[in-house]
Image 1 (cartoon, protein in one colour):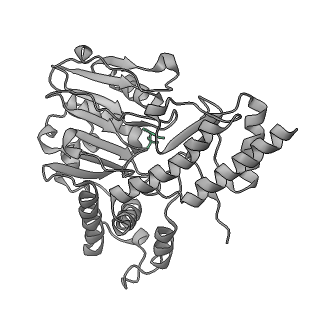
Image 2 (tube, protein in one colour):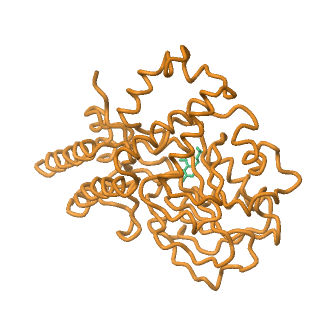
Image 3 (spheres, protein in one colour):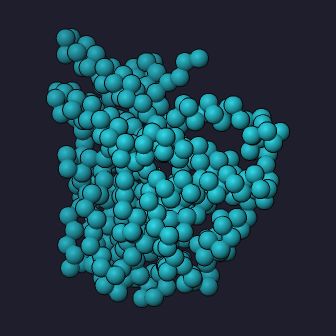
Length: 362
Ligand code: PMP
């Protein structure tokens, strides 16, 4: 069997040991004689799986007791509407930082439900950085303040959290979930799709401060009401059972590794290999300013579309797949999530060097 290194922005690689464990248990989960895929979500065996997954996530992220953990469906995009429907319930105002396409989409969706103010944007710099913020722009009566911590398409990360005072801070962490430690208590809500760092596509995890629940608008669909989901242990309806099980295996993999401090150390080491090469290369250039570079998504370009296309083709032929940049920005992007082994990044950089040398010699 030969496995490729998959640099996709998501769905993306899962740890091989997790896939092997899932394969081992595929037909017979712990002597039950059935697969988790076939199991009733109301069974005691399944309850144990979801409970353990939640407990392990709480340990990994050090989630305080006054936060609920929800295992939902609908992807991160569904939360773009669910967030205003649940929280835009006082002044009807919300402040957004727009640092890439995902926060832009979230702001556009929220503006269908209330008064959205873009308090800072780096659109005019093609999102090659996160925007400077001027706190005097923040509205103290906003119902919440929204950021996308790691913009997957552009490869930037917000490291300095905005000081929002009593206004709850909500962050989309889809593409940096569990990549390094995060102080949950600084947020009203954290959420993300699982298909990058956690599980197969189909699961969305929301971590919500309890006191923010219970004020959803009347028109909020039951399925989008976080209070309903929290009150039913994420089982108001059938949850994404298999994805939650897979998430649980990934949480155990992380715990065994030493938790998020160790994950961060590994992610920094991987990213440094790639960024260091981008900084010394004469052919390949990173597109994000140094201080805002993501550890997870690394976009880069050459100065020619032909070279980009040739490079992408060569990567694919060498088992380095999905290196093409997002259709909205072009060039290349290497997504090096938690499950990407360091060997994958080394192989990519080795091929970049080979490609550059071959083209310089011509
Ligand atoms: N937010 C971010 C940061 C993302 O990267 C993505 C997907 N790539 C989304 C939101 C949308 O996620 P989904 O496809 O789960 O709706």
